Amino acid sequence: MKKLLPFMKKYISYAILCPILMILEVAADIIIPYLMSLIVDVGIAGRDINYVVKIGCIMILAALLGMTLGIVSSHYGAKAGFGFASEIRKATFKKVQGFSFANLDKFSVSSLITRLTNDCNTLGQVAMMSLRMAVRAPFMMIFALIMALSINAPLAGVFMIAIPVTAVLLVIIMSKARPLFIKMQSRVDRVNAIIQENLTGIRVVKSFNRQSHEEQRFKERNDSLRDTALSAISLIMFLFPVLTVVTYTTIIAVLWFGGKQVVAGSMGSGELVSFITYITQILMSLMMLSFFFMQFLRGTASAARINEVLSTDSEIREDKNPVMDIKDGSIKFSNVSFAYPLSSEKALKNINLEIKFGEVIGMIGSTGSSKSTLVQLIPRLYDATEGSVTVGGIDVKRYHIKTLRDKVAFVLQKNVLFSGTIRENMKWGNENATDEQIVNALKLSQAWEFVSKYEDRLDHRVEQGGDNFSGGQKQRLTIARALLKSPKIIILDDSTSAVDMATDAKIQKAFKEELGNVTTIIIAQRISSIQHADRIFVMNEGEIESTGTHESLMEVSPIYKEIYESQQKGVVGQ
Image: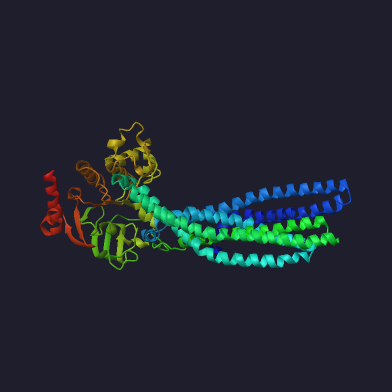
């Protein structure tokens, strides 16, 4: 928890005022039982109505003051607590944004969602309770104990048994509950994972009629979370009846011994009433502390999970004196090998290739031949395990990451659009793009064909994930978005697979004519998408099997020829 304290800096004034006001509220609450004893033992016993009214008015003022201080303290505590959680959430989200693909492979998406929501909320609640409950309970206990001792020190000896018994129970139960709370958070991760997976793939679930299967999978994980939560809460809940028994046992003991003193005349009846009130305040403070510690245990588990994210350094390290400008879009791979994190097997083996600025490069190969892995090294989505990758004659590790990625436009296999309008999505490529520039990019990607038919055109609504567009439409929109970056390198990673062959041909023609000053790399499954490229790389099992034009590869590459012939048969068969 100490590592997270700097996030409270912005709200430090609230964090200081909250406990101060809380202590003053406790002082106001503590004085009320004493005033009540004066009313009974002095005012009522002496039949002094004026005294009763005077002390009664002071009691009312003390109660109003305590209530006001409590309200303001609660407000400040909430601002500090949830402001603290907000700062942690902001920092954690920013950290995740800076992660490399390798870091994201380590943390599951569902786990990161839980940490950014559930864990941050828990920390906010713990912070608020630390400023209020964790201050109120001990001060209430100390002040009430002082008042009880001042009224009748011998009778206060009952606390010497009640407090140690309660403390021992608290330590035993909390030590057993902590591992259960940690386990519970991991169970929340598992439930979130299946919810995310199921909702993302809901169309597939329905098309295969697997609702019952998915419901059963969810039930298993949900039941596991419920059982773990019940085990943890049941253990904590056991503390409350025990504390209740201790409280009433102590009150009975005080009534027994205190009653005898009242009868003997050594103690006033008002003093006995206030003494019992102070007992209740002391034991209620212990119950309050136990509730705080229960939440604090959850907070420590959440803090550990947040710190795990915050202490994870990105696999992508930036140079101390980064290069801020890219001369051109030439690319060179020198003896490059790559293995995914936690894998001993190399996905890429000794890659050597050189691409000239402005070339159109095609890339093809069987599934799993690491075509996507190869191009992901160019914008440093991953870093090469061995060898070097250069852009514009400079190692990519020397560039400022933002500079590099601004000039390398990447259209991934999975096309992602965000909720908003077409214009807003296009401005991801260039936030200052004019409508004219957007339309031009849409025309190059052949997306203007369908966008121009909408009445609201660029203001047409995009649902989350672009679910109101077909696969081919999404691909064309994401290509347009990439073109708006005015890149020096554009990489199309199988991003025209959902486009018909005629439209695909138009896209390739537009690229050839309009992107002469851009290095274009096209990864495709269809040879028709790349056969007019300047050069084609054929990949097989993480290595470059052959390089050449369409015509030369038909003669020298068995893999390329086999792919071509199989696709031609498919076309003839249709």
